[in-house]
Length: 236
Image 1 (tube, rainbow, N blue to C red):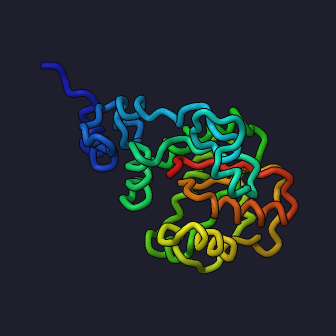
Image 2 (image 1 turned 30 degrees about the vertical axis):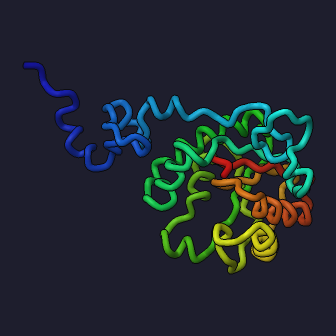
Image 3 (image 1 turned 30 degrees about the horizontal axis):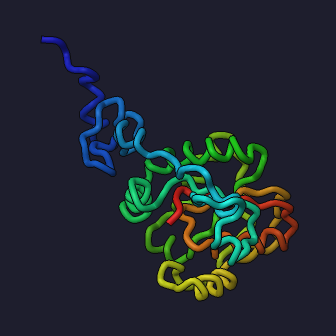
């Protein structure tokens, strides 16, 4: 009988490596587990980006239209362009929920890889600015999920800056569109003494109404930024 593979390593590793896929719950192979990302290869392959054509402003799929989508024509944005990677209503939403609420922090590296590829293609020389979290959320969870993704991007060679701060505010997900815009406008500002890069990629996990991206972009442009693009893991 042949000796087991990694006999002295596997018992210890099994305590720390992911064992099942977050999306389909299938057991991970050893190769998959050693990636330390709780996602099987099949689900990884099936997570494809939002289809073209896309709105040149918000980045959402459009059909039969030339130029900005109807929503962007109705509600002009403060950011110059946006590019959400995935549709939230699918595997990406499951991953984001597992990351934010399930403590699956190892997903940060997978998100960083996917976001990094998009940023390198579209805005390779820009500085990445994470959207700051509500302090109550960080106190509750014990960590900032967007900052963790930004940390992964930093290890990939991207420049990260944190010129924004967030005042106490309501959770956006509980508000209507008009309330979202008003709440976000009060919530985001430049941190005291912040130096604002000239060209920025604003980073967040989910793009919903665009209220958060707009408020942050206004603050950044008010501080001297010439161009602000917005990138998110998924569009809801």
